[in-house]
Image 1 (tube, rainbow, N blue to C red):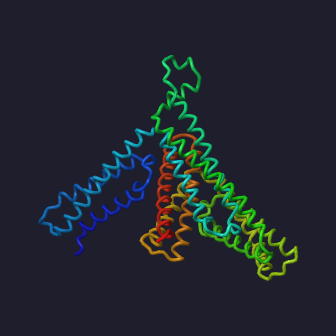
Image 2: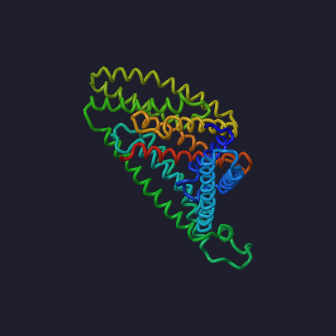
Image 3: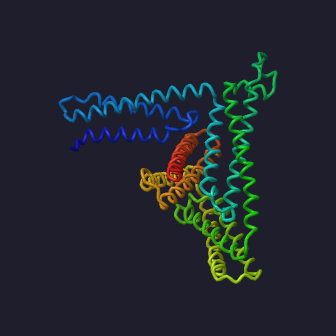
Length: 399
């Protein structure tokens, strides 16, 4: 039987539990936001208190008893999580915390590879996408290398002389003195970044080698598959997206790859290939080149006149739409070809949004309120993306 006040309490508790699952469950504790957890604890405590205040005469005793137990269990798990996070942070320090964030980003780049390269014919894979992944990892590696230097400085003996008697090295060492565990986190992340970078760079050569093999007919089919991949990316990130959320660099990359494959298709025909499908694809791709170039001009012009805060708001809205689509089409659904493809697309879209939000975070000139807002948005979107990737793995992994 529906009891409005009880339904409302159950709904509030469920929303708090879902928030915990998205932002804390199976996430790296060093990357968690203590302020978010405190807010979650406060709201959960309010729900638990309201449930505890229900008088037996109000009916629905069994249902209330179950809700009370569930609310208390949830609240206790939050307190346990707070203690675990505090312990982890105390051991690793700020350097270790930042290394943990960068480790998550390395793993997200690796998951991009798993979605688009692992188990698929190399010749049909996007070299442009792979190049972007390498650039992303190189930036992460550079930051980790800087953190490694700071971690080494932090392990120097504390100096007792006045700071003015020493250089910047000593000031940084004392200011960033942190537990030794931070250095261990940085070293592990740096090794992971280097290993992943080496693998991705080797894949570039493998893809180029694969594209150079096969008969002219096979290569025409290969280029058609590459074109289909580019069309899919254009539809996902440009045609179906709000104009301001389209990253100019992504569209430049897609356009460059489109022009490259157009030339490759022409080269096959010029070398004597008579293939109606290749001829049709040459015409189709040729028609798209000026369309995409015009789209790029419009995106660049729109981005030039938008303030960072407005762009952040657009990206926030785009992330909300992706999250809603994921909950509708993927969460609690069984694996089908359609759900796997849609899950991949939604991971890609959130991955793209997370990258842009992180760039806004890095470009913030001062720790203003808007800059802090971008930081929280980037972290929240990253949490959602991690959740997406795990759901994708659960859908597509071995049964």
